[in-house]
Image (cartoon, rainbow, N blue to C red; front, side):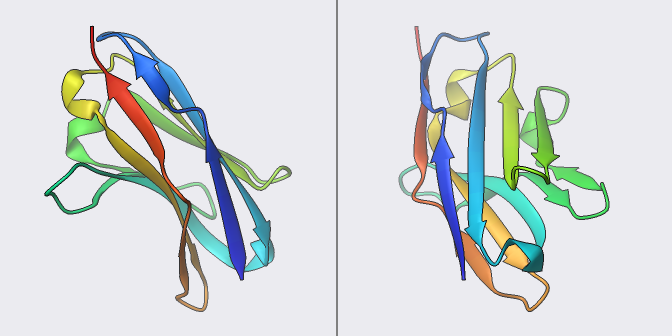
Length: 116
């Protein structure tokens, strides 16, 4: 089992920045991929960014060049640095972890609101 705890959401003005954190605990040695997804009402959850063990990263098209995912293996924590935020980035952001055994875990979600 893996537990994920997110922090760092909030209200920010357009053009501003936020950093989200997600701390993993439990069977952390089994984690192969950690990442972030987001969801708005009435829409499917979409990929924001992934960090794959070994260093590779993936980003959703709408955030490329603005968001950066990083991973601190010593702290079992993944971060999402979000810059140049836009109102359309407003969503609930969920931390995600996938293990080598293909189990998937989700955090409780943190609200990000971009508004003036």
